[in-house]
Length: 142
Image (cartoon, rainbow, N blue to C red):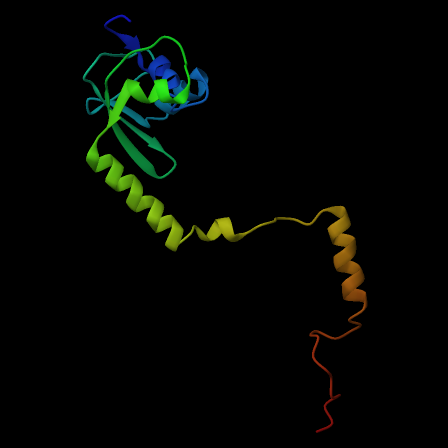
């Protein structure tokens, strides 16, 4: 292990992102900071650096504890960093908030119907006739 390693390669080896390309894209979008400064993919990290990264709506802050040029199994990757207590607490609060108040857009289980689904909807509507609702019509004679 050398004293320095590119941030994109370290994020990939520490299993924050599935590929180095994804890591580089996230860094390019300004979602990764090293020691409080916005990073570039070629930025080198060293032991003791503080890395903040935003994954979806959660910001994780970790301290670099090890460097690796290879992507190993998850237990080995987790030894490359230590998450700060504040970051762990914020992540747990965000998870709890999502559990109690899920994102409204996620409740939409399906979008546009498939061809088959459209036919089923049309067949069901033909059975309704000219009525606007499924309630019994009294033809206005009350």
